[in-house]
Amino acid sequence: MRILISNDDGYLAPGLAALVRACEGLGEIDVIAPEQNASGTSNALTLTRPLSVFEARGEHARGFRVVNGTPSDCVHVALTGLLGHRPDLVLSGINNGANMGDDTVYSGTVAAAMEGYLFGVPAIAFSQAEKGWAHLDAAAATARAVVEQVLAQVTAGAEPWLLNVNIPNRADASTLPRMVTRLGRRHASEPVIRQTSPRGEPIYWIGPAGDARECGEGTDFHAVAAGCVSITPLQVDLTDHAARPAWVARFAGRSA
Ligand code: MN
Image (cartoon, rainbow, N blue to C red; front, side, top):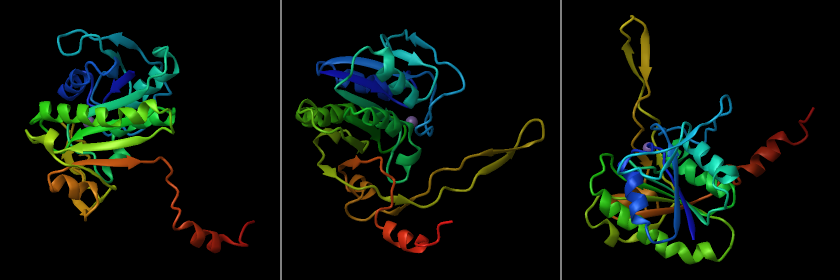
């Protein structure tokens, strides 16, 4: 079993070290992570400059390889030449904060896992529901338990899959029920925060994500609020299949 681990909070993030430690003994582990915090970079690839890779030093990042790019860059470079082998599993996280509902579209954590999935490798993105790393060890134990639960699905050589896992920040996280969910929806983001730079120019900070709007039973928001670990199977196909017939009718006979 060969496991590639990345994240979006950067190679020094406690969540990455915790996930790596938790996966010890499950197989051969490679860690390739962004040099800087790349949260919110979604599936971005760096196309306008080359990428550098260096080996990290320091107690919590020893042996980690670091890329001066995005989470998707890390996994992309790993799978297309850097690793020299094809991993059996790609893991991402553990993220500092939830990736539920609309977050998944912006998330670099989900994107790192998705990059593996796009290359045909099963992948899991892990996030803690609240920021601040409270009960990170429990989240890491939960992540390991989830990986162990799906290991059989990895070796079966079946179609690749992509799971998005959100873990409540609780000391008993690893004993919580694991619920398979669908994505909820958030309200639109809060407004930008306008400030004035020291040079007197207006500057804007992106505002915080909106609160949960569609958070009924069956959603990731609902599961986490109910004290469960949320596991959402994701797909990449953004087609609105339900709306397609209506659009076909609207455009029928109107082509130039
Ligand atoms: Mn992050």
